[in-house]
Each structure stands twice: as structure tokens, then as C-alpha cells.
Length: 292
Length: 230
Image 1 (cartoon, rainbow over the protein chains, first blue to last red):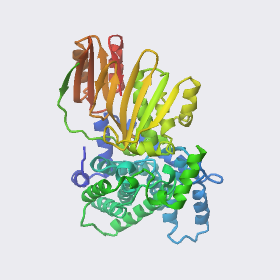
Image 2: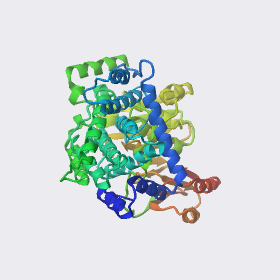
Image 3: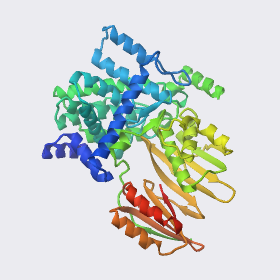
Image 4: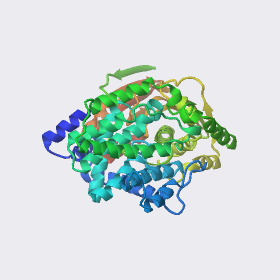
């Protein structure tokens, strides 16, 4: 099993294969599955992601039981149709998919955890927007998910992917870095460029806290996936432009882990710090607790 | 009780692409909903039947956020044997109560007994028996099982799944089990044997998921042993 991003890049270069191929081969070996079994499982994940994004822009949108989040993917879609976005359609389409997926998650709908439910919007957000730009086939999209998975396992095994352990940098940060690496490959970048994109994306979200208002996966979680998707697109572009990092992806993963260990528990998924502890955050928590 | 443990090799937690892209699940939280369901499912597999009484103790982050994350219904859904994307998951508590199951959720104020912020201690009982398990939700829907109490035995597994447990009055079951492991090319990371009052327990921490053929062959032993695959 690959235990570092350095190993992945080396193997991809030595074997002259794309990273998704390394992922599929490892999956087949480690889980003793056939190619078809592995492929179909990832295709089911892709379908789940598509359904969530689709659901998020139907009618007025999807709303959580508390009403704290919902309907924003629809607003963004309408805004996109005006053609006047500042950050550009590709970026905002990614944001729309990311926010929409997390709205479905908050509504307790069906999503695919990537790598977690709280960060479930970032990867589909990026994938479905670059799908348009790069004209990705269904096969390309499944390849994207395999590449993101291989990078994801490195961070999961060497650091963590749970907000309770490492804050949001471990969830949305990881997802953003996974998406950036996979986006680079989908755009024809090299394995080194994928690693640089990963490093950039994760560095830029270091220290991001997990501060869920009322302990729910709504505020600020839904919009954090907007930055996850946006940051991934930026990191991918930087890498493809040849902008590199002196501090490599594996070292950044370790830095993320140590930052997480240094974070007080108030900032690690307890709802006792950050925006959860603002006057409004506290009022929302009390209101919801009273209702129960 | 006498215990024999065989030394283990290093454990990597996330071994499959689908541990980080997946599971397909009902939201909102992979660690506090899907992971919680997985811990409930461990209790379900240990108990093998519907309990009459359920006591769930939460520690740390679970204790703070279980209400908003659907951890309560997720754990009960697991205890009832539902999958992570089963549409009945949010209604699991209603369903359990309609079947006469008594449920008690307790928010513990102290630190987790196993040193993890997402710890749930589940106790199931009916008129004649009980089980207890302590699981941790490590992220992305993945869990580890840190403590099991069943049939008078007390185990502290390394944690990663799959774990296989066989309980039998036969003291030579191990030979048969190892034959099956070898036949299906199954790697064992750690194993523990225990004996108590004429009953033998064999626990194996497996390196990867069992194939359906391996599972079927192990289940053929169910008339001479209680075979549990977590």
C-alpha cells in the first residue's frame, strides 16, 4: 500500500501510468476484488454525488429540518444564469455543487462522504464544474474519484480526516487537497503537479477550525465547502501554471496533523468555540435545544 | 479466565479507496451519523437479535453533538441492522420503540475510557443475556472496536475491522478456523484465545474483508460455534 504522496508520484513515474490506475490496482489487491466490482462501486458513488447536486437545485432547493441552511444552491444557480459572476462561472458552478451537496447532507438526505459528510460538497463541486470545462467522460470522472481517493488515504492514514480530531482542516482541507490533485491529473498535469496542488490546497486551509453552530453540520459547514471547492480550483491552476511548493505534500499533511493536535477541543467539533460561540451562535443553539 | 494473545503487526486504518470516497450515507455526519451506525451494527452482530433494553453512553464530542448529528437514531439504526443509506435510518428510534425496545442515552461528562473524542459505549440486554461494546468513530465513517463483553468474556481488540469471534464449547475449533483462513488466503493481524467455565473464545483481527465464500464456510460452523464477523 502507498503510504506517502512521494511514493505515489514515484510509482506513477516509474510505471508510466496515471495515478487512478495505481489506485484501482491497489484497491483490487488489498480488498481482493475484481476490476468490475471496484469500478461499479465507484460508479455508484458518482451517481450518489450527481443525485445530490441535482436534488439541491430542484424547485426552491433543499432545506434542513432546523431551517438553518437550504435553498442557496438554487440562488447561486440563478445568479450564474445572469452571467455576471465576479469569480467566474467555472468557480461559481463548483461552489454551487459544493453548497448544494452539503445542503442535502444537512437535510439528512443521501450523500457520498468525501472523505466525510461534512466535507461531502468539495469533491463533487470541483468534479462537476471541471467536467464541463474539460469535457470529461463518465470514465474520466470515475478516474478522478480514484485519484482523489488514493491521495485521501495518505492523509487519512498519516494524519486524520475527522473534525473532532483535527478540525475542519482535516475534513474540508483534506477534501480540497484531494480534489486539487485529481483536477490536475484530469487536466493533463503530471503526478508532481498533482502533489504540488495537494500541498498548496492543504497549506492554504491549515488551522481551519471545526466550530459547528448548535453542533449541527450546517453553519458554517455548508459554506466551508464553497471555499473547499474554490481553493481546490485555485491550487490546481497554480500547479498547472508551474507554481511549486518547497514544502512537499507529505510534510504539509504532517503539519496539518500537528496543528490538529495543538487545537483546543473547543475548536474540534464540540460546538464550543469559533462561530458556534458567537452571541447569535449561542442563541441558535439554545433555541434548538429548547425545541427538543 | 486464561488469555493468550499473539503479537500483531502494524495496523493501517484506511485500506480501501471506499474508506475515503464513501460511504453512501444518510447525513449529516460521517463520524457522528454513519460511524455511529457502524458502532450500532457491531452491537447488532454481537447480540444477534432484538434487545429489550438499550443503554448508550456518549463521551466527549459524541456527548456534545449527538442530538444535532442524528447520532441517536444512527446508533439505533445500527442496532436494528440497517445500512448507512437505508431510508428508515432517521426513523430508527420510532421503529425501535414501536417494537417495545427501551432506550436510554447518557451523556458522560468525563473523558473517554478509550481516549478518543467520538466514543460510544453500547449495552444491549434481554431477559437472558447481554452484550456490551465500546466503539470509536475515527472519521469518514470508519470505526474501531475497542472493547467487547459477551458471554462472560471481556475483550480489548486492537480495533480495526474486520474482527472475527468464535465462541464454542469445543477446544479444538482453532484448527478448523485456521484451515479456513489458509484456504481463503486470509491474513490475520492479531489473535486472542480465551477460556472460561468450559467455553472457548477465539478472536481474530483480520487484515481485509472476507470473501462471501469464506463467510459461507465459516457460517457452516454455526452448529458448533457462535461465529461473529464484525
